[in-house]
Length: 159
Length: 279
Image 1 (cartoon, rainbow over the protein chains, first blue to last red):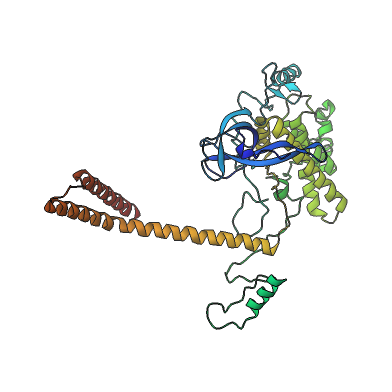
Image 2: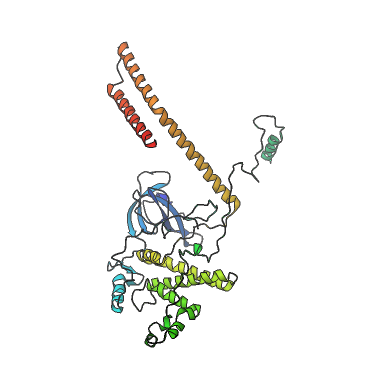
């Protein structure tokens, strides 16, 4: 049974991937497709561009996107409705507290307080919002490529 | 079969001089463009440029006391020559390395007894990697050592990847404090070939030409704009006058002409400004 093309579905949940387009974000949409011969579901990945003029989606965010009444361009068929899970900033749905892997952030701080916290520790309240290391030390927001030509200039995005 | 015969007939006809006198040769096609391709030099995986370290193993003050004897009370009252024997200078290299590891983990430690948090583990790996990179420079033929180093670098990268997913803010702070770089691998990795690189360079070359020509055309059209607008005003006025003279319905309003005049004035002002800026 063939799945309906992702660009024709009215609402989708996708993960943001690096994209150079200025007013749009690219989303990776993973759905399960039924193979009728084997009677098994297999993952099928499609990429969709959604209108995002302020570029509020960052790489890795899980975002709800909605179909536009009319195609904006040949590629842009959807628009961003809501960022559901910001990447690397997990909130526990039951208690509404922030957590890291299996522990609440509060608990981590409480533990270090008991042991006697040091100044070298990471402080959540003083931390700037995500993205302050972009283009400096963190290059995960761009598509990297294998370096294929020596221009003599620095190529920050080449691997 | 018939089709193939037809095809053969068409192409085996004696070609006269003129339009059809050329051959399409797709194989071994050589481009006339003067693009020079320089193959990038291979950087070994253990080098700081590849591993993502912005700094190497620093020079450590050798007059410091070894880590194990740092808080020894007897050493405080001891003779200077005895003290000297317990400095890093008279200890094996591993003492210097462990001193450096203590310093690096100290930058990110949560509390005094913190030996197992994510950031401390990554900091410790970073220290070990930097020390190993220095050794690697001295013994480049030590293959086992190289493998160990590469595996450690990959492991650190994996841990950084996990940390990024778990806690982005802490990940960025860690990159800043340890002076590390995080660059994910490209999705489609293929070894570098001459043909593929030349293709990409040709695409770039064509793009540049297109961009340049479009810009030139834009400049040319902008230069023609004032003359065109003047002509437009003249034509509109002429049409209006003719219509008036012939007693026909007047389709050109004064507003329309004024609009074009304003446009022309704005354009002239803008051009003057640009000239002043340039000079």
